[in-house]
Length: 181
Image (cartoon, rainbow, N blue to C red; front, top):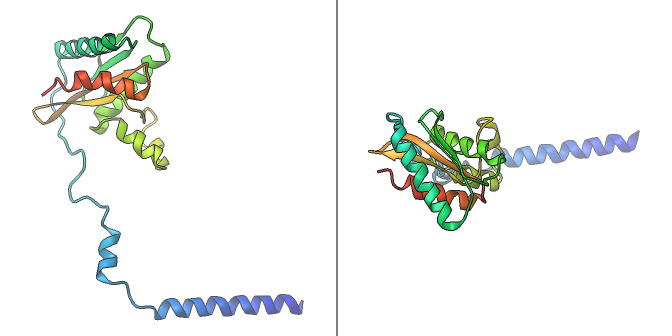
């Protein structure tokens, strides 16, 4: 019993000494406080206004561009074009493309449209340990291969590709997304 009282007394002494040292420490300098907000951007990232939805004829043209890129590389892809809300406008599954990527391509497009950014950004965040990405939206896909369609500075939709690796999907979709000006 006497031993436990000594241990408890020593713990209190250590705690009191540490508390006193903290209270007598100098206040943080101005440079330290500016460092705490150094990672906060001045402007909203991805603050691109939404525009009118991508027209069906444009969506079909983008599917053709993506398909041409995939064929050129002998890759079998699922390709989806969505409006700014993430709702499907046009879809194509190339012969032999894996069935599992039908939904993946559509979810990549939806993620890109609704969050106004390339899906690779979510992949990068997730890979660097930011697990919160998985809590943003149950349909979010954190994988390369989704690109917003930006026309006249406004998001008119997005294109998503699935069936290859994330990087293969991105190459195919970027070929189509870069045609929108």
